[in-house]
Length: 212
Image 1 (tube, rainbow, N blue to C red):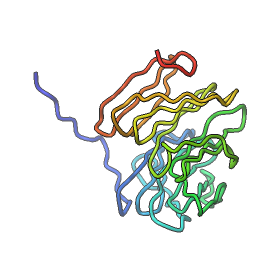
Image 2: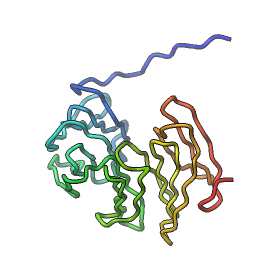
Image 3: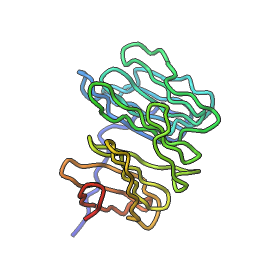
Image 4: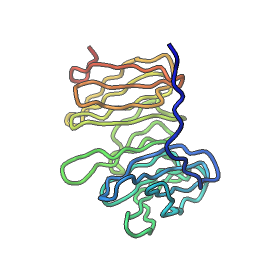
């Protein structure tokens, strides 16, 4: 059999360095995304055009990006999470801590107000600025996060999956990959899809905090 080469439908240019994250923006306007870059900025794109250049970080590298219906959030190398209203491009710092850099963050639905989880260089995990969990395996490097209504899931550099029950705070840690977990997605059918740095995929079935 042969493999078909498929060209991209669209190429978006504007960042001056590598793009670390891409996130869709849930607005009434179709085809709206935001990007986070090594150049220390974020951009908002619609229909293939850059419609907003989001700045405000003090150093290079915006490591993480997320969006809800009102705001765009970015996690930067200066240890801050900043947000911009989607309609008005005014930066607002919602979490600043230059002594313990934020390496990743995640917005988890919690009633009507999302909960902001941040993972710091020290290995500390915070929920809305308050310490929530800490692990030496999360210290010093990249990690990936996702959640469902019952648990927070964190994949680390060593291939471990940390599952934190959002109700009780109990933690289960499972070695599930040979190396860095580069991507982590919680699926709606009681399973988690993991991608290692070498692009190997793992589909895990869950039973509470345990893996079947």
